[in-house]
Length: 450
Image 1 (cartoon, rainbow, N blue to C red):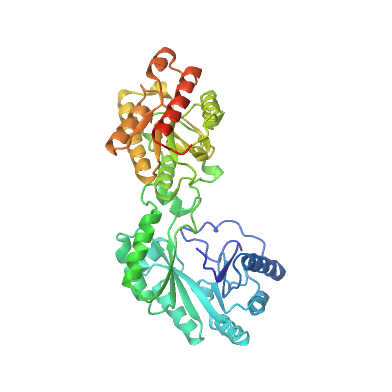
Image 2 (cartoon, helix red, strand yellow):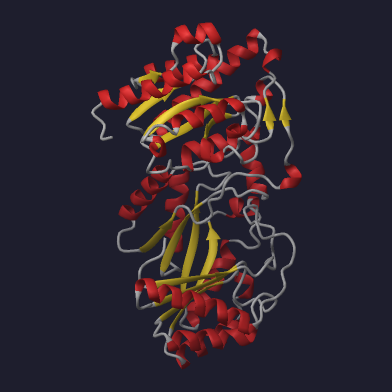
């Protein structure tokens, strides 16, 4: 979340000097060091772009994937060039990031000198994450609270303000609110401003593996800002910013960790890759605003679903509706509740549920888990109308209709039972005509604007 008067420049400068924190995705290969001219070009391009959209800039935040004062990442010569750019554009404050190890007397003295020379307020951002040495050790941070205090006092000695990052909802934390309150209470003694970051497990990190094991779950935007608002009331007057989706990405593992998930049973219902996607779709994902109507559809053997004969037939029929762009197609499968826009992402494009191997116990598990997932989806995402086009003798259909009843949501059944009994084929032309007719009738009966 960027304020109107600030400009944020983010530079990918490769692996930092530590590169071992559990949530860091930059611990891989080294990247070629950017030259002074490369860095100047990146900063100037971002500033010009920001100026065209928002006008004047008062604060410049220069962030790289590591430390501004690490000479292996950012050339020493660039430091003064950055101040010159700030002076040229009338920027009053410059914020850079650094790990405590690089906040030496030499570096801070030089930074302070440049601040005075160009009459620009300087600030250093430190990612403390939490005021708890035990947790800091578990998340593999390279320093402890005493190191943070020492560097904050050193910054103060040179007239440099400190901005501290704290993470909300880190793994291993037993009470999120209590831990955050304690962290802010202590950090406020050493830091002029605090940024609250929503902790999120990005793929290809140790943190993601913790999520896969079911030992951590993300916060929803509502949960995150609920905590933030409570904190702000408690610490009124303290400069506290909050950022929910800065680090959020789709929960797709690296190619080397992907496998085709073929099988039947509890392991293929509650597979870790299916579970993290369910968490994402329920907690993080926001349905497209244009989608006003929900249509539950079956999965298919062929992936992505839209390439199957059944889905091609369904889509071609639905295209007759004026409201087609507003219709949200969501598939029901052992892999979860899957919005159409995710159908070609792993693992939804790389699994097969071998239905003929189902036992009565497996069917029981399938219904229970699918029903719960549908309930969670319907609670998290609201629509004006709800439709279902599934085989009426399937467990998926029963799970959908039972979920609707439980939540007092009317879900319109779009399958003509008489035609289905005769053909039992969802791509049958007569059944598809009945589907389109049912949706049209329902929307008009509901006095929807057509």
